Amino acid sequence: MYMKTSLQWRFTTVFMAMMQMIGSDLGRSVDAVIFDFGGVLADEGFFDGFRAIATQHGMDPGGLAETAVDVVRGGGYVEGRASEEDFWEEFRARTGLTESDAQLRHEILSRFTLRGHMFDTVDKLREAGYKVAILSDQTNWLEELDAVHGIYRRFDLVLNSYRMGKTKKDPSIFDEIVKALGVAPGRALFVDDFEGHIRRATGRNLKTIHYTNRESFERQFKKYCPGL
Image (cartoon, rainbow, N blue to C red; front, side, top):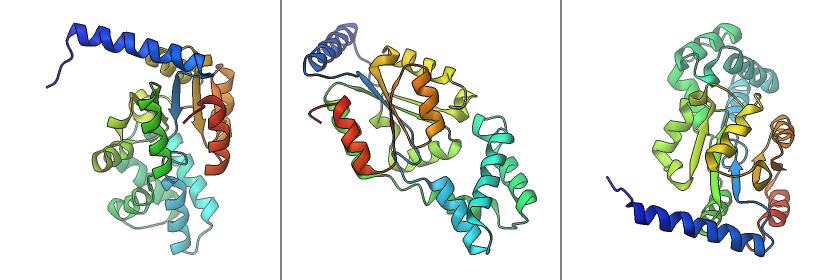
């Protein structure tokens, strides 16, 4: 196991402080950028997967996706209060579908395609001295995707609702992540594709970008992180 010495830790702390000061001088308005996962860093595998399942069975795609949301939130799976097995059992009971857990989860996980341009942005941010984090309403699926793609190592912090016991519907989660990152709320930028989460983050004084497409994101991002 690699351990930094106390001298190395002091050097890193001083270096990060200097980078933040330099960033401010260059017009940098934030010191940390917090990303949602599905719909921002990756394609939205959850909704895309359940819509695909619905299409395969001649069902309403939007309706089935909403049922899945209701089960994953109402049953507590997204907060780690229920197991994946519990989730799929309730989902089948509500929809009449009969596929196995393995068949259904494949339709979801296979559609969380990582967005290369977003991970390029993450890497550039870290190189420039910004702190980068993931804040996601996810389950054990995020950890399985990390095991395949090595996602977590590219971030300073990953907060998953499945491990936190709370989701972004609880505004206090934004207080917790900026505290963990060691930055003031007004010096953190939060990027999410769900307007409700953006509204709650704004209410906690974070700067925000509502992700709708790549072009819009890149245009707004340049205002907060010039030169990247």
